[in-house]
Image (tube, rainbow, N blue to C red; front, top):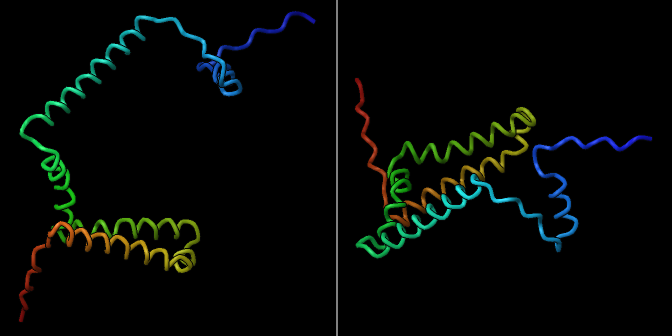
Amino acid sequence: MGPAPEEAALPFPFFDILDWFFSPAKQPRRRPRTARRRLFTLAGRIAGSGIVVAVLHLRLTTIRLTDVAEACWWPADRILASRTLSNLVVIGPTAAAMGMFFHQGGGFGVLDNAEAIAVIGAAFRGLITLGRWWRDVAPPERNARSRRS
């Protein structure tokens, strides 16, 4: 028999991963520092320090943590204050679950899992009600429909 054929090069370090997995005490082979790796390391340090500086600056200025928390609540407040958006929040996951059960088992799959579908709808409706109570947000009154004679 002749010499063993050379292994084809893999696009990722497969054998290095296997070596690390089966002998975790062994130190991984250090790759040479290329200009690209140095550039990415420098960019990571610059970006990381910028985020830290921005957070510290934001914390030390007039904006306090409660103001930031209140600002993060505005999408939820908007959903809770709108009848249409809150109905979409309830109907969307419920319809998605119905579609999943219909895809798996047809009409009988929906009937077999009717309790689960009802629980999903009730849970989201309960979350909307709880959110409106907690945030003290109420949707606008319904418009009285004019009766046509």
